[in-house]
Image 1 (cartoon, rainbow, N blue to C red):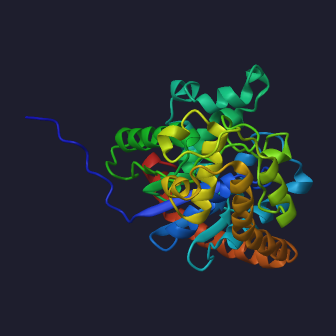
Image 2: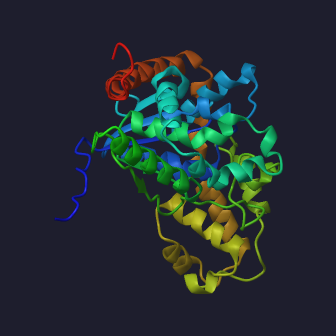
Length: 344
């Protein structure tokens, strides 16, 4: 006889993702996440949260945190997420996230967390001073995903390792408690063009809200003048744009700007090069600036309108939290029963 694989998960297809409220959103977040969320909401049941539990793994000013949650929500709405279609909610408003995370803390193995490279990068030489939350962050992330039995997760390169840990946690829970197929083993949704936008000051570094130089990124709340000025100042090289991607290799800043143009315009980098081959950045940058202003300007304007009416944002979050709790409750109830908790 041969060993048979355990039954696969057979529940509905669902997508889940979230963004931390720990700084201003920028072009990389917009192209790498928000526009993908907007598309996915019409294809599959979609849960999008503001990750305020994750945010406090490093210090956040309590006076600012709620406002930061509203700003991320405003970005979601301004980018085109429809709260009547996607479930948009603050993570901390759904207590089942934290309860399931504790169960998973008792399923995950210490060695798995020791291999997480993001903790090493964020803690640096001060591991002993880092919070326990920063260390166990991937376990809470597994709970976020599996609480809704999400089958697919949009991830960037820096989160793939965490998704693998989520799959490990799901598989171990299913095995240890003899409930094959209870949790899905979620798959990564590769994000395609625009998934990795690099700094405008360094083509080898990812665009980041934590970069001390504001000129390194295009913030969603930048006005038209700021967007155009940052693109004019973006680091380039003296060579004209080539005709092929192969010729573009080894020129990280040029490659990044071409990729930004392609992602904003919904085209391939090859198509952009076909249009601008042989032209210098003196011709290319003004066109890129015009395109960025046309695409990002309305998003920033709508964000400012929404943020001027926090009551409207709070209504969206309250409704989304209620729907998220309703979706999460059956999973947590089943987990409590499986684990053997009293009263389950």
